Image (cartoon, rainbow, N blue to C red; front, side, top):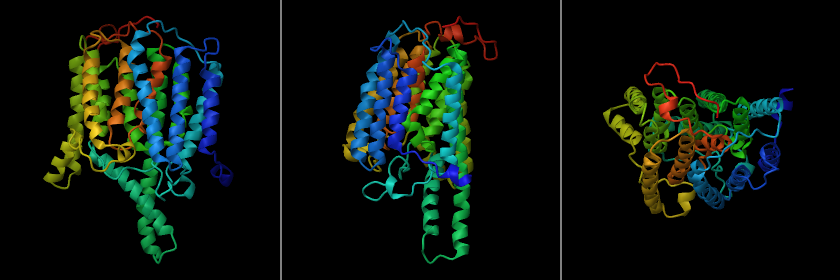
Length: 439
């Protein structure tokens, strides 16, 4: 029975066709063929060919494809607040069928992790033409800026997988030495699987909770979570923690937006782990400006203090602590060494104007409009995260988990004009939440 389960395989190309057809069949609005939602769904499907190109070793073409589709999606995200007439439209599948599909997809995603398909990077079919591991699973060698202990743990996991294969290869290594190599490798494998599963469940549950609490419609949250699980990206990148951990924190920051301190804690964690979500802070302060900005800032600062204390505990000496603290606050943002993916092919110097444009966009979204609602927060968060991952020197275009959940929630959102901080956020930290009308 175990062999029957573990031997199950679905080729990524096949899953692309199956997932695309399911997405169209379940979510497409056939009675309004030229609706915005239909174009959004087609846009999400268009990301998949780029992933397949990278998976099969055509990395330069694949990264260009992903970046091109992301650039085309950016104007859509920026103009989303202009669509004020947003009736709440349900998917074509009944609630019971949607719940069953989401549960089944979550089961297969869990099996994808537990059976090593998301962690094991061996096998010639998954390698590039140069014989290296495909970038879908390859953790970049040079990291930063960000929370460096986190990235060291990821790199250690990648090294342990390589060491484990070397230990199992027909080389003159005695059993005792091989056992010493395999023991930490097994622990690291178990650790990355556990954290990956926790993050995936956190993203799905956060999207469900968002639909229930902020759309006042559980089926819409269920539809958004199911669409996230249907994405070919989700099945391929199941265990990349540098993708999943910041994404989970961003989703829960959105789900907790009515409690500014909690939202600040989550967003601060995402910003300091991956750094680039730090560009979201001006937008969120602009959202909370009339009520809750100080509480939100306190939450962000609390996260910074907690992570700094962790750095003190983990640092081997004062020099390492200073380097890690500088990396957490952006040191190395403009460096050119260690380029991987898109910026390995194109001039790295082009990142500098892009990062400057990202800063301008973050400031602009923070100032306009003066009173923001939840719709502005969703579209602005997705736009800034999409833009910021294009600026990353590491595999730019591949970090879809950062912006996919808020983008999907934006696709399904109803009119949220009354979900402003002044109406949705309590006047005091521990006060009861104000009542809001249904969207």
